[in-house]
Image 1 (cartoon, rainbow, N blue to C red):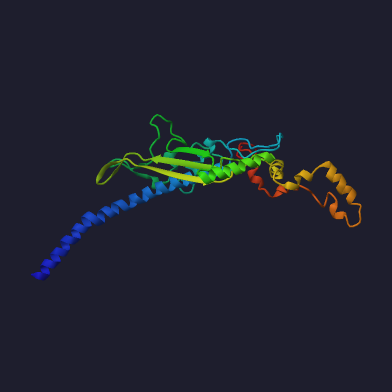
Image 2: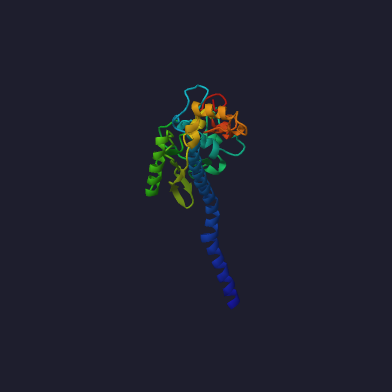
Length: 286
């Protein structure tokens, strides 16, 4: 009898564990995978947009030559935000487009992991809710994004900002707002999950960077900015060059010639050309 009772007890314990532990876990694991995917993508979107702002400036950089052939790396906020669904929410197999020429369709292009059963006996629907019920569905309709930039935070940052401000006496105007912070948030539709009737969840990603934005507007612009910090630039004038030319005729004075000894010399050719353009122009998103 004892052995029979033990077998019966084990059977009951197994049935209870199966009912209240194993089956709920089997139901929750796929769902938790979807929620992890939502949080992962919104975090990636926040990191991406804060980084892009350090690359593409908001306004025209200082000391930019008055020449139409020189451009600065500038992109509007909306154009950066428009890339979020194309890069982080589309299903596998679709090309990432920098042009965004085709209209984005959240229901058609969204990744399958971001779809779930929203009501009883329904098929999988888009989990991401519209930010505003009255908004027209499009690139910006299912996420919200805020961007902030400012001075270096903290007391140490204020000291650094003051030190950088002193460089303005040399004529060099550096960017004094190197702090970039971005928030991206997603709200899910009320959706169905056994044994819960409706779930209303939201996810938020935040990213902050401290970086000097890439604001060179061409070779001439970069050269002008750097020369302000080269001390020998004060010797780059006509009188000194005349003395160099005269000294070059002296025996053993070849090194004094202007083609050998260049005061205030800067070589900006090492800059990457693909970042020296204005967004929207030819060969630069235009």
